[in-house]
Image (cartoon, rainbow, N blue to C red; front, side, top):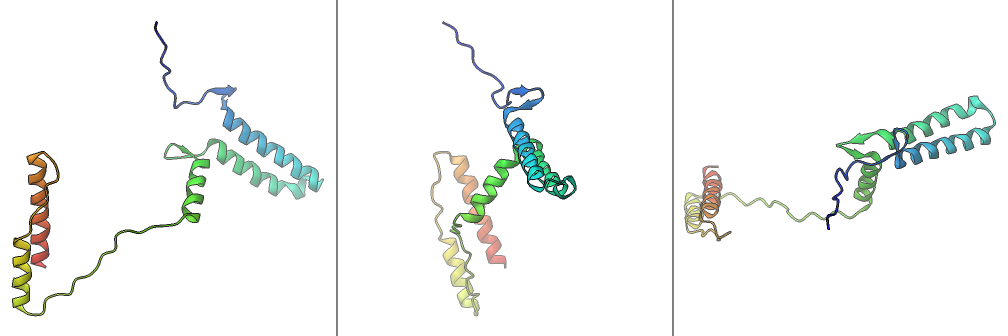
Length: 143
């Protein structure tokens, strides 16, 4: 028995002309809210500014994309970021500089006896890891 595998699942279906369901809901909601503002103020001149703002926001929600993501997702991520807790793990600590040459020689000798942990089963990866560690240690000694 053969089954048809769906393709292009990232593309939303166009239901209302050239609009997807979400775009239609954003625009219809903005239109409905604009109509309610017009009925509330009962004057087109007083309600023009709020209507323009509401339709602008609904148009942005319907059509504007940042990095190929809808604006509603960006607003959701921003809301979660600003209200969520922020955990910072790494904090750089400054080591005091050695004052005498004897202390500098002792620190350099401790770097020379440093063993590099084994990262993986690949010898090539281990070699590049140890070279990177030695290079960073050499740069620290030069400073």
